[in-house]
Length: 153
Picture 1: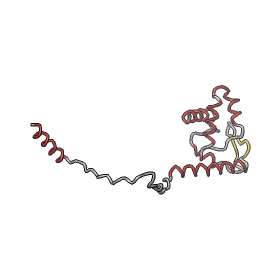
Picture 2: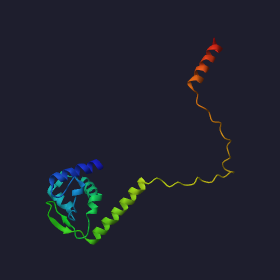
Picture 3: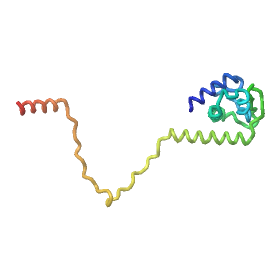
Picture 4: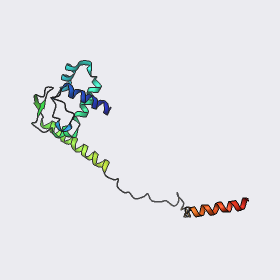
């Protein structure tokens, strides 16, 4: 679905170059209800599911969310101002950024070392130590081959 969203965003940036941008750092807050404007202009050229996933991907991007600060102008399909980012929009964006950052840190941090579970002697008997087996060298293999030749010959 990620590839489909990227392709749809690429198409939107071709149809509406003043509004949609592939380069994430150029993205600006979109007009509330821009989905309806897109459907009016493009009609059945784009499916509802394609548009939904593309807009979700576009607006959940970190660069996009970081630009949602109170009072920032929103833009329409022509790149013209169409409303402003409200305090509640800015708060929501800040919370999403915080969650994204926390999720990213969880992925990059190594898991905390945990103590092994206690061994219950009644349930798991203590096994005697296993002898370590040394790896055979090339000399050992040659010696074994020579011994087999003598034994079979």
